[in-house]
Length: 71
Image (cartoon, rainbow, N blue to C red):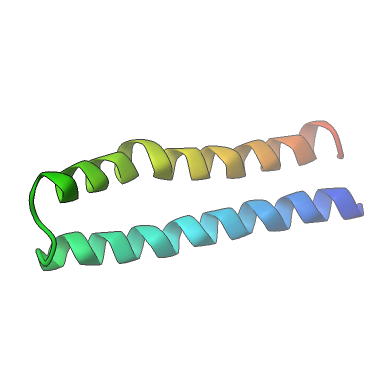
């Protein structure tokens, strides 16, 4: 495995780990009901529908680059 491939794979793994950590923390906050209301609902919805998907999408693109451009 060349250096570029390894760096892309490591970066993808870090994005996935960060997403999982943040998602867990956000779900704990949501489940605790310490923050409720319209702002909280919008934040949780946006995290699940947009931000989380973008992080996972970026990780997937990095993994794809290693397969396509740096086999």
